[in-house]
Amino acid sequence: MTDVRSTRSGIVFDEPIDGRLFVRDQNDRLVVELNKLKDHAVEIGLSAGTYTITREAKPALSMAKVSVAEGQRVSLDERAFITVDRERTARRGPELATVIKPNKDTVRVPAVLSFAGGWHTARAKTMWPTTALSLGFLHSRVFDLNGFGFVIFANNVKHNVNGIQLSFGGNVAGEMMHGVQSAIAFNHAGSAFGAQLAWGVNSAAKRMEGVQLAVAANLTRDWHRGLQASFGFNYADGLTGAQISTVNVAKGMRGIQIGLVNVASNVDGGFQLGLINVAKSMKGASLGLFSLVADEPIRLAGRFSRTLASL
Image: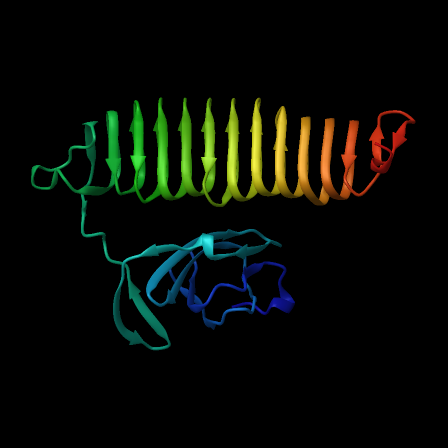
């Protein structure tokens, strides 16, 4: 662990999180072990990199994966953690060894070739496969994909994707996607770290770190760190980065919105550039033909302005 006084990078565990936390780097080395209590936020200083956090809290074991950039402090809340099965083993020195069990309804196979639903082995046709290669026609059904998957219609991964998902129809990663999703119709992931590329819609149910590029729309239901760009509509619960589209909407924003219509509840550093800009509060700049900040005068292009009280 790095002294927080000597580094600008790190992870902040929000107040509601509790339990024993094990932080491992991308080489699976244990770098931090701590016992986190509720109602107290905890910050740890770390070098830039990708980290896996295992959390032991009754009654379940959960995991989160996060990428920390140089100079970035990443905040984690309860929604970042995903419950997993576990087995407990004996202590090895200062570290509690935690072994993640495969789901009892899964089977590991080298490849999945599917027509409609997934065929892999005769003895396990009803089980969810974990594989490095998934190729299919109508529908592929995989538990974990660690490699490459291409399906013409629907590329469905129930748990995690570590690699590339391609489809003419849609891609789904039920829990986490680390890599790239590219499709004609749509991409969806629980949490996404990397890139989602679609002619239709990109969606992240939780957090997104990386790039969403779409013709129609990009949606992130938690904090988005990176870029959202589309011709139609961008939405993020929170944004650190940039939104570029016809209509951009973010509840909280630290970055840039560029579009015909830009809407943000709170702009905490950055600017809006568009025909119509709307914000509840603004710590930054709003440049447009019509700019409305709830706690400031309405600003029109030119020399005209009037306060909200006069409406």
